[in-house]
Amino acid sequence: MTVDRILPSDEAHELLDLVTELADRELAPRAADFESRAEFPREVLRTLGRSGLLGLPYPQEYGGAEQPYEVYLQALEILASRWLAVAEAVSVHTLSCYPTAAYGTEQQRKLLPEMIGGELLGAYCLSEPQGGSDAASLTTRAVRDGEHYRVTGTKAWITHATSADFYNVFCRTGGPGAGGISCLLAPAGTTGIEPQLPERTMGLRSSPVAQIVFDSARVPAERLIGEEGAGFRIAMAALDSGRLGIAACAVGLAQGALDYALAYAREREQFGQPIIDFQGIGFLLADMATQVAAARALTLAAARLRDAGRPYRIEAAKAKLFATDMAMRVTTDAVQVLGGAGYVADHPVERFFREAKVLQIVEGTNQIQRMVIARSFTH
Image (cartoon, rainbow, N blue to C red):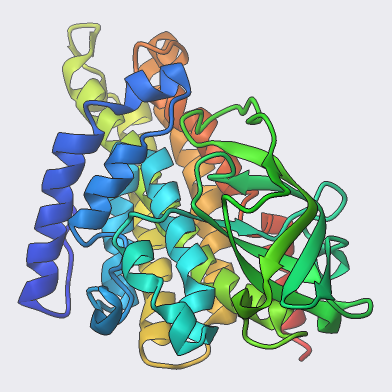
């Protein structure tokens, strides 16, 4: 199913053509195999980085493409329609570059070309075993020790935990609450940083997610991003952008499921005719297509606010909430269109269905998104 896209420039059209070509060549043929082996496609990320696709929204002076966020999100959508784990990896990596790009010193920003170019893969260490949604209560602590911080604690649900080259570590340098949190940019090879065994996840099996133990890890004080106490503000600003990335991933995953279900319904015959000609199937597909289009529109509307420098936090929460709930519905319906065939791994809609669930959880659960939106009514 062709998506009719309105883009801000000819350059953006050419860029998305490149993304489509790379996704068809590098992602689609490999997804099922890597997912079945639970293997992280690190080289694919390097290929995307060398093609300029890991730095789309970042400034050219740091090696980025300086594209509007609405263009970046549509590129992410295309990747997700072929292989969600790769799109999510791009989204997480882009999120991991944000603290350095937005709040780093000039010395720290010298790392950005390698980050954006994909030679250094990032991870975002905010959640903890006892505190996911309640990020302001995190307990990982960093104590200043001369020219270093000693970091002690455990982070949980960290994408790229076992493969990252650098970690954004949100840790407590002061008292309780949001004001006591800081952000450190820690090299992965630091003594005392100990990634644990990957979690055995329902979907996204080629995406390494694990806990990370910090056992008095010595991180140079010059790796403090921003100032002490600014970490929570940095984390929330990054998550606003990250939620748009997850919304775009959800739209792409749902588009992939819709495309596959449409193709199947046109070819599968029952009672002497293609099943797409039956109203029950045709109406189901019509609803799926409408939901995908609505989620795409909501996501890009929020992105355009961001591009215009206007507040977009609430719109990002709405987009993440709606798009990820939509992806769960659409992938469920894609399985239904295929019937029994949709329940076996011979068809990718089985994998799409399993993958959609995590999108309702990451970057703030959808219950948190509803809380953010509801609070905006009275503040």
